[in-house]
Image (cartoon, rainbow, N blue to C red; front, side, top):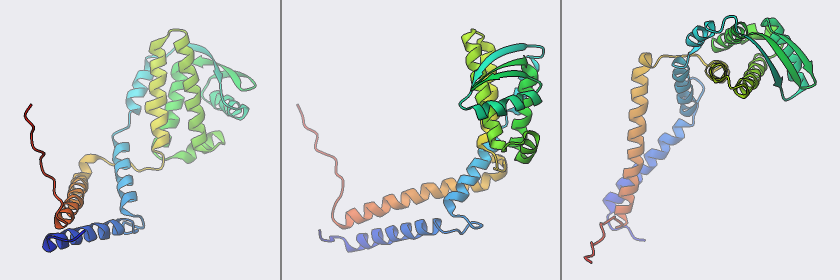
Length: 235
């Protein structure tokens, strides 16, 4: 294939080369020891965490279940998890009897949910060592066991057609425990305090994408290739 428009072809080549130079630079650890992709990922995760704190709302909902007694059967994946669960439930003021990978838990729903949210808040604030010292287990394993217990309790409530309590337990599990677990170790930031950085990142993404598009366009035009509308056929 011959170049029919040398000037346009060289412009497209220069733009393509520049695109790949910038791409190469983005893979280098130029942002405090990490590359551009890792830096942007951390920034957006931090902003996401800053807007994902539902703990105050969940604690308010928990108050509405004061004095609500419950008894549920919980089946966990392993006996080790059951042993952890028995110890954790005891510290949360909930009685439990175990049999293999199953246990029966009895207690006050508000008290148990409050204890779980307390641990979730410590994890959300990246204070995992407090959880580890409190239970004697790695902090993320503790959160996973709480998540598993809540999941089983939700199923039990649904089977009893107590959908309101099941929805509450699902909220604690997803908006409390899951958020704390997934964002553990990330420092929260507010979007309003990073408007300049976010705007710059968005503009860069748009311009960088357009840059590659125009590079391809000029290269194709340089080779004499162009898109033309097809002739409309009359029926």
